[in-house]
Amino acid sequence: QITLKESGPTLVKPTQTLTLTCTFSGFSFNTSGVGVGWIRQPPGRALEWLAVKYWNDDRRYSPSLRSRLSITKDTSKNQVVLTMSNMDPVDTATYYCAHIPPGSGDAFDIWGQGTMVTVSS
Amino acid sequence: DIQMTQSPSSLSASVGDRVTITCQASQDINNFLNWYQQKPGKAPKLLIYDASNLETGVPSRFSGSGSGTDFTFTINYLLPEDIATYYCQLYDDLISFGGGTRVEIQ
Image 1 (cartoon, rainbow over the protein chains, first blue to last red):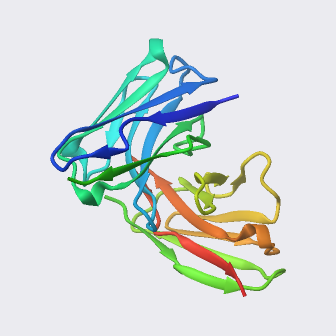
Image 2 (cartoon, helix red, strand yellow; image 1 turned 90 degrees about the vertical axis):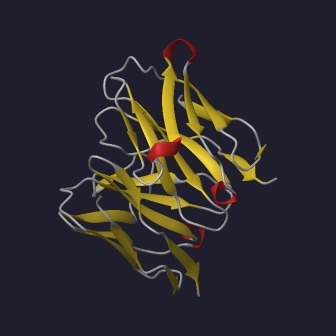
């Protein structure tokens, strides 16, 4: 059974850097085709894709946020870490990580429960 | 960057109705499109992948079709538990979500 869980601060100040960790179980990043993505959702608004990390160490970022994002993986800990710099109140959102299965293209088939991050001084 | 236009943004229908949501891509994306259902306070759930493939365990009243730039998502017999917001998601070199369609019961 695949599970993912997001963790990190619930409150950050403007201009700070946010670090979120996705800890997963039930799959391995050594499996060809596997990926983990980050998606966020401001309150009452639509989903927004942020970044994705693949089994082969490839990574992609949302063009509008590329300069602020970094995604890394720690295969030994079964974790994917997202950092977002220069946080602003508009970045207040629920942040999700999600699993991409092999051979699916980039369909997110299993999601974490999400973690709410508020940006405020 | 490829843009997605999802419509309508909201709709109201009766139990038993057929509901259709569309997504249009700004460029040809083959069949690289997925559909999700999100209920309030919950994470999204994958319903359809690669435009027309039903995810395991998803009821058959949900379906998807299309290829290239125009895609359709259909609920063939709307049930009260289908009240949710539905999103399309494209993948090409990058990933993008549509703006969502809120489905309500009349």
